[in-house]
Length: 259
Ligand SMILES: Nc1ncnc2c1ncn2[C@@H]1O[C@H](COP(=O)(O)OP(=O)(O)OP(=O)(O)O)[C@@H](O)[C@H]1O
Ligand SMILES: [Mg+2]
Image 1: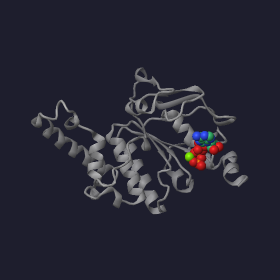
Image 2 (image 1 turned 180 degrees about the vertical axis):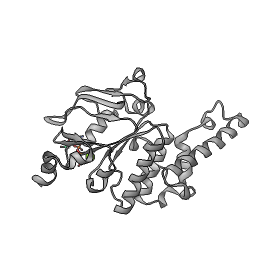
Image 3 (image 1 turned 180 degrees about the horizontal axis):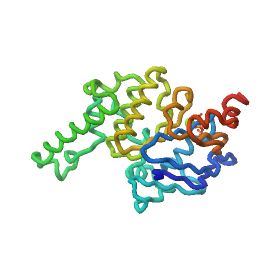
Image 4 (image 1 turned 90 degrees about the vertical axis):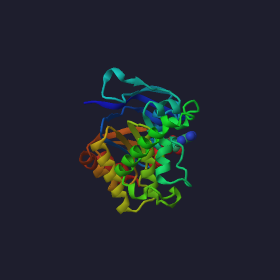
């Protein structure tokens, strides 16, 4: 089994509060791993510590972007831009979509290109070809996230769910191998929430990418997960397949118990 991310006894404290309490999570490659748990469980803090937004108090984070144990790197405490460039992208780390630009333009910006390099920019013949390649690649990505037909629509005209998929498209354009999504279906209606997860399922099926999804609406999200971790008050209290999780009394207790 190959893991794209592994944390070992990861700890993050805020004063006296242990928001992430010795968390060990392993994320399988080409998979959707879901992180669930009640409000304040530490889910967002965990992702922030892994992606460099916050520094851990102790513990380690290992990232293995390609399926090769020798290329596994320890990214503990790396600054966010370095984690991002290594291929682990938290969607909000990518500069926010430019709302006035079209869907296609947004993906092109994330793809980058030689035309933006001031040394190469004057050599038009070099980058015209590059520009064409980028447009082709951008359309491939848009097709995969279901936004192809909206390619010329300004981003501000998109619905909440479509904007989320645009964020995913932009993450893929940066070459991300692991994408962390914090509540991707927040603010969308259930029908579109299903659509979003279907696209994410297709992505892990057809391309070399892995998703870590934090989700609240587990009724909708859980069936789309391959593997689930449940956090409560800083600790992982359960892990397993969606089915195992749904039948674990500890999980039922935190979701239904003291509420
Ligand atoms: N920057 C911070 N400073 C102090 N305390 C924080 C900070 N960020 C989070 N916390 C606290 O850490 C705990 C975990 O919060 P976190 O946001 O990680 O939970 P969560 O599982 O993402 O919750 P939610 O489902 O509400 O998004 C909470 O008690 C929260 O109040
Ligand atoms: Mg959160």
